[in-house]
Length: 172
Image (cartoon, rainbow, N blue to C red; front, side, top):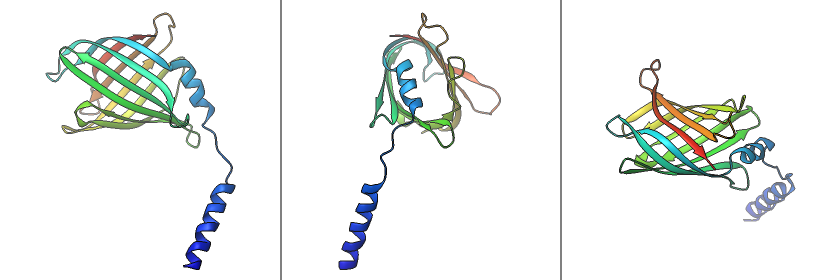
């Protein structure tokens, strides 16, 4: 019992002595550019694999002690609702952005991005759903501040042919 108590005290003391780390500055910079409430309009693919009109609201904020950008999206495609929650962070070791996303229908994705280049950011994701696994790419374009943010996504079943599954224009 005394050995256990001594180990617990030693571990607690060592943990308390660790210097506090701060979130990478890349997160604050990304939040400055994208945080807020965005109203989005465009097209999305429905369950019949047909592109239909969609509107939605995307809310982006720093979360979890400013270590993650939290995106929360609510939309309506035709008569159906769609929702996702995404968490993105910057991994200073690999110098890459990492994302985890969960969505309506039981699907989830994870992947990474090289980051913002020329006001554009592309993500490569592995998407998992009750219908199976698939490769997915997300694109963000903020090159025209007056136009707001353009978002699009595409998937491939064979790794060669990419199909657009949504295209949105979003404004604060």
